[in-house]
Every structure is written in structure tokens, then in C-alpha cells.
Length: 532
Image (cartoon, rainbow, N blue to C red):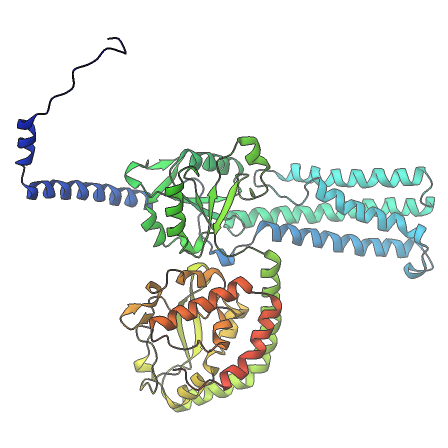
């Protein structure tokens, strides 16, 4: 038929229309219900199949995000250790080569040691001696180390040839360079073995989950399998009825609702949306929904292969990722906070030992039962942690699940308990949680899972509630010094607590933490209104 040929227009079929209209609405509703039930059964069956499969990238044992070590931190530690070792050996060699002592050594005599030591460390970094790739064997890594020493040796030979260095000093520097080669080679063998062991245990490899069983997901998984630099725990898809059972062996574990409630999320560093960025409506809906998670959420951007390889934000898999939500990542800030916790926490623990002993004795004399009380709380990334406190309630009336918040003049509280709660001395045992790395001195206060405000779970009152868990919980915090401490009896109190916690997370710094610590005592002494 010619493209321009007219075709007869279809005539209405009143008999057919009438036949359809005669189908009872109850039958149509029943058919729709059966169809919906079939889809739901299909989804459940898929989730059950996925839950029983681990995939090729999931580690044998999941390590919480808090307990894992970042590769950049390990690399920086190795670099500092190499630098310190090189400096110490250079000092010793320079002192031996100069009878007058290292402090009286002329600069031109010290330059073979100082200059070559600095050049050596730069060359080791340039040749990738601190990368420790997952697929790279020990031999290949030691070749990188040797290449750095070759550059340093050539520079030393060139300096001696042009008489930039005294010959005796250049000879001593050459002997020192040989000795440091043996020492650093031994160190790098140790670094390589430690790194490999940490990767095998899952402590060094970041865990991610994928949202969207798409072609982008397949490319991401293929690159992960090739590099072994990241562990993909599973795939979730908001359109589960259209998704395959697996992609390259990585199982599809459920839909986005299953992701929000999945027990693996405390072990996940990053959620990667692999839905095409061109599908803006779907991406925006996913971002809005997943934004309630404490985990980082990123979008895999659709770009060319060459551009993707060079993207600066491709640290996980050499794939371009765009940050969508999550706490701002700053390893130096996190390291400074941890150092602060260890130093101040250790000093505080030692100083508090007499107080801890006196409180323990008072509790024992006041009422029968254990001195300490432990309760499961939400920590960093929604991880379940066990928080320790001095027991302040009668043992028979304790509330392990925090199903009922404390109230003023609560009859469950003992006489000693009322005093230590009003002064927050019941929180002192959490110093041990701080030293173990489960908590911080300053941060959002840890809440028990399922904490209720009235008849409603507190977490359901604020969409951003889980954002509190983007940082370790603290013994004190920004909310505490602003009067938001103790029970949350109304939705407004919950919203204010969450708002203050999120404000702290966004502003956190070493000096802000010190300010909060200093202000905690006067704020507690001046607070006589909160129900504790």
C-alpha cells in the first residue's frame, strides 16, 4: 500500500463497548487484585532468592563502615612511616660521615643526604609505590619501589659527576642509599602483606549497593570485578518486576523499600544510583527517597568512557560519580576528631576513675542489681552499638528497649539514679565507648531503635531523622548545650533535636568540639527543667 493511500477509518463497535460495560466492577476489581497479588508474590520470591545469594564481590564477613579503614588513610600512614625511617637513617648516616657531628656539618656536605632523601620520597610517590592495587602482586609493587631508588641513585651520580657534592660525601650517601633500599624494601613487603590481609578481611574494601538494574550497573560491576577495589553487596531496583535476578552474578535483593530497611545498610559506605541521569523524574524521586538514609548517595553520571576514566571523583571504581546526599567527607577532619577523642577521652577516664568508683558503690548500696546498664542504640550509619550507663532505675523496672521515655518524677528511677541522671553522671561509662571508637566525645546523642514520642516512633516524625547517624554519636553535643537533652515528649522537641544535630554535623570542627566540651558543664548545671 502506498504511504499516501487513505485507509478506511475504523467504525465504533457499540456491541463490543456494550459487552465490556456489562463486566461487573467487582469482577474487574477482583482481577486487578489477583494481578497485584501475583506481582507482589513475584517480588517476594525474587527478594528471597536474592537474600540467599552473596554474589562474587561480597566479602565473607561484613565489617561496619565505622570499623573499616580508608585506602587513602593507609597510604598516607605508609608514606609517613617511610619518610620518618628515611629521615632517621639520613641523620645517622650524615652524623657518621661527618666527625664534627650533624649539627656542625656544612650544608654542601649534608646535601647528598637531605636532597636525595627528599627526592627518593617524591619518586616513590610518583611511581605509585603507595597505591597497593588489589590485583597487583608483590613483585610488581617492589618494581615500583625499585624505580624510585633508581631515580634517586641517578640523581646522586649526576650530582657527584658535576662536583655538586664532595666525593666523600657522595660515596657515603651512596652507601646510605643502598642501606635504605634494603630497609624500605622490607617495609614495603610488610605494607603489602598488611594491605592484602586487610582487603581479605573486608576492613579496607569499601562496600556499595547499586540502585537500578541497568546497563550502567553492569558496567560498574564489570569494572569492580576487574579491579577488586570495591565490594558490591547487591542491587536494588524501584521497578523490581522488570529487573533480572542478577547482573554478572551480583544478586538483585529487592526494591527501594527493601533497601531502606535492609540489615546490610550499616555496612554500606555508598549507595550508587545507576539509573540514567536523563531520566530526571525517576532520578529525582530516587534521590528524594534515598536522601533519608545516613549513607552517602551518588549518581553514576552518563559520560563517555575516556571522560569517565579521567574524572576526579572516580576513586571507587574509576567511574564518574556525582554526590547527591550524605555527610561531607573529610578524612583529615575525621582523623583530628578521633585523635581528640583518644587523647581527651583517655585523660578524662583517668581523672574520672575515683568518681566512677564512688558512683558504683552508691548504686550498689542504694538498690539491688548490677551497677551498669547496657542498651542497644543506633550509632554511625545506623550501626547497632551497645552503650553503657550507670544503672539509674530499679533493676526489675528497667527498660531495655526504651519503649517508654523517662518522665519527671518517674517512679522507676532510684534515689541515686535521680541524682546521677540530673547531673548526667550516669553517662560517664560511655567514655569506654569513646575509647573503643563506637562513640565520640561530641556528637548527636545516641537514641535507642524504636524510641517513641507519645504513640509514634520518633524516627517517623522527621524525614531527616536518620541524618543524625552520619556521624558517630557523642556523650555531649550541640543539641545538649542548647537545652535539647533527655526525653522528647512532643513532635516539636524531636524536630528541634534533629535540626540541632544536623546543624552540628554540617559545622563540625576541632574547635567547635572543644567549645561544646567547655560549655557542657555550665549548661548541665543550669538545666533543671529537662526530664532526666
